[in-house]
Image (tube, rainbow, N blue to C red):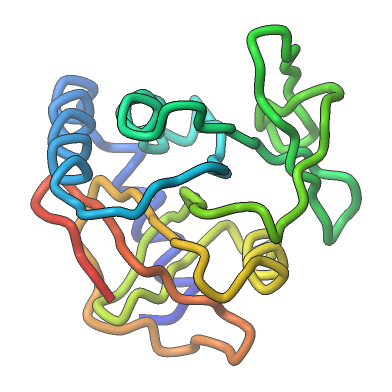
Length: 188
């Protein structure tokens, strides 16, 4: 399946996902995530879910990580150009607004350097058995991940199981280390 076909396929699956089943899947993703053996995380970068796109919500995983990693600092993306995003430290005072893509992002705040980030919860539409992901096609996360440390943990969340193979991956595509689904935690 090509990226374009995968985007269409997973968008339709998400749109047709029953809300009660979605909630159950969300709980199962958290349970499978909690079985991962992870190092201490000081800086986490996570996406904020787009409500109308029915994305998995990373909030329960964030709470679990805060419990396991006292003092965890959390950054969220803010788009600053057509190709770039900044990573803004989230706090109780952080004000969020919807950007042009309908994504919540901070209005302002302290920027976190990519080199400090230990783990990234990466948004995706789908993934394959090799850890290649299909995002929304803008390339923000591939550019961001290429600027991170080589050992940064890249974790995706998906309500659905992987494709066998995404046929048209590119050299600049950065694969995941893990993808958590309701069924299991895939390690690549």
